[in-house]
Amino acid sequence: MSISESASERAYAAIREAILNGTHQPGTMLGEAGLAADLGVSRTPVRAALVRLQDEGWITVFPKRGALVRGLSEKTVRDLAEARLILEGAAVQRATTEHRAALAARLEQGIDQQKQALADRDLDGFIELTIAFHRSFVEAGDNLVMLELNDRIADRQRFLLYSYGETLLARCADIIAEHEELIARLRADDVPGFSDVLRSHVGDTYSSGLRQLHM
Image 1 (cartoon, rainbow, N blue to C red):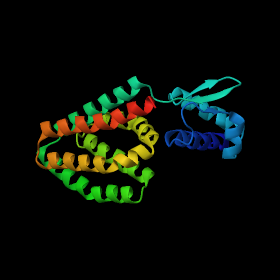
Image 2: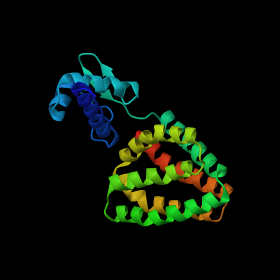
Image 3: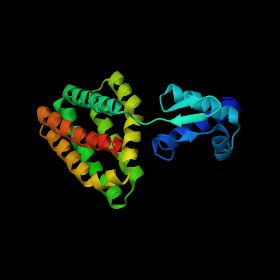
C-alpha cells in the first residue's frame, strides 16, 4: 500500500466512523479543506475517501461546494427492518436444535455485558453488543452468503442506533428484556415464538427510528 493509499484509507475510515456515530449529522456539509486539516492529511486522500463514501450512499458530493451527509429515508428504515427479520429469522430456522441450544447458552453469558453498558451509560458499547447479539442469529444458520449480507447492512443498523442517542439509552432496559426473551425462545427450541418476539422487537426499535425522522 502506497503512502497516498494509506492516507486515503485513514481518511475514509475516520470520516465514515464520524458519520456512523453521529459526529457528522445528516444534513451537514463537509468541506475537503476542513476535513483535511482535521485529519492531518492533504486534500487528495480526502477527495478519494469522499468519492468512496458517496458510492456507498453515505454522502452526496457537490463539486466546489462539499459533501452533504445523508440520512436514512423512511423506506430505507423499513427495508432495513424487513431485511433483518428475513435474515435472522431464516438463519435461526435453518439451525439445528443443538445449535440453537448452544447459541442460547452463549448469548445468555453476554446479557450481563449489556446490562453493564446500560449502567455505565456506554452508548458505544451497548450498540456494538447489540449488533453482535443479532449477528449471532445469522451465524447460527451456517450460510456465508447470508452472513455477508448481514454484515453489509450492519453499518446501516449502527447509524440508525446512534441516531437515537439518549432515546436509545432510555429504551435499553426494554431492549435487554426483549433479548432475554429471544434467548428463552431459543432455549425452548420455539422457532415460531422466536420469530414472533423478533418481529415485535425489531418493530419497536425501528418504530423509534421512524419517529426520529419526523422530529
